[in-house]
Image (cartoon, rainbow, N blue to C red; front, top):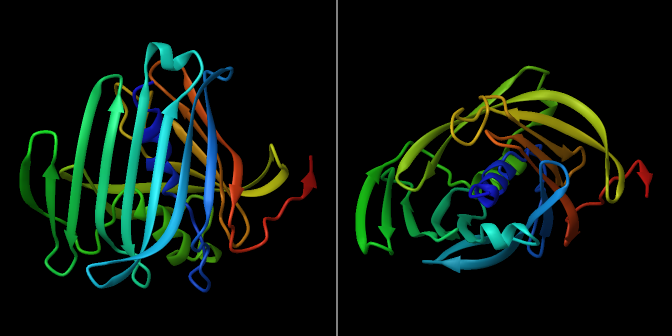
Length: 259
């Protein structure tokens, strides 16, 4: 269960939206329930959006939290917090914070991005070390990517099988992020039947995932592009996250058939 929260936050970043109108705003909040192998409650996670200023820049401040619940927490306790400060206009991040405790494995990393110099200053608070690392142009962090793609990518031009790529920075490394568009699907949720867009990210096969195409996600086919569901086939068992509460949506939430 060590990767529950990392999986949720990392792959919620694949929200897809049109470039004509903002998909979110201040006050948006999501909560997700997670289950392991289809029946065992594993935990919860939330994402919230606020507006603030950072070094004279108007930014969105997004906070992602995740924690284990139920029987799982007695075997493996997780308490994670992720934060991103990104520009309201360009959607590029200025600061990223990762403060996690996963079964006693702790990390507390703060990253300051210099987008004009293509650099990231990584401050490892646990070890009290700092290093500057070169980044790709227009780099995203794992949280800002979610909101960047919601606003910037035009899904009207996507065709089934199309692949989407971008550059992401995580901890001390640049990552090439890629996913494939699978088409549309109506899915049953806690709120009713919802039209969704379906995607498959490419992930690294090995200790966590069974294979590169082990992850599938669904987002609502409306102006919000709400994350509805994530399913992952892990090396041991499977993980599923479902949206179970929300507030502060900027646009109407379209439900085909109510519960």
